[in-house]
Length: 155
Ligand SMILES: CC(C)(COP(=O)(O)OP(=O)(O)OC[C@H]1O[C@@H](n2cnc3c(N)ncnc32)[C@H](O)[C@@H]1OP(=O)(O)O)[C@@H](O)C(=O)NCCC(=O)NCCS
Image: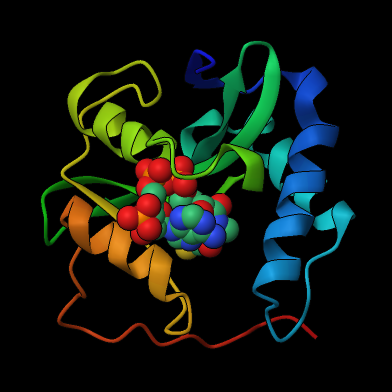
């Protein structure tokens, strides 16, 4: 079994993250699609304003086997910072080894990936993604009582 760790992504890992993000969206396509340029712009935004969030990668013996985008949201209601796992992807050959479980455990219990202790972790999952839902349920994630509404301001 290879040793694996989640760590903060380096700037030289943008291309690997772009490829994995496109693979994630190919698996679960959003209505408007996601381009490589869009993923790069997310990585640029994190670097320009680190308070927004960060990319982390799953390093399996020097090979990048997954990534997640961690994004900050300050909740007045909860009285602190919510860390949103905005995207989470583990390459098919590395799944079911507990890597996503380890990521959530790390965000809960140590500060190696996220600088301060968040008051909550959040993520979105599509209703069709039953297996991911089962994993999140096992990890303790529950539906919020409010429904999220969105007004798109893009053309
Ligand atoms: C969902 C995902 C991130 C889980 O990562 P992981 O490191 O394999 O997760 P863990 O090993 O900690 O937990 C395994 C559990 O993940 C869930 N799972 C979800 N999709 C899965 C898949 N395609 N293959 C294997 N397990 C999957 C299952 O509940 C599995 O439990 P099981 O082994 O009892 O069936 C990973 O399967 C993945 O990247 N899937 C494609 C992208 C995706 O759906 N991302 C989540 C968007 S919200």
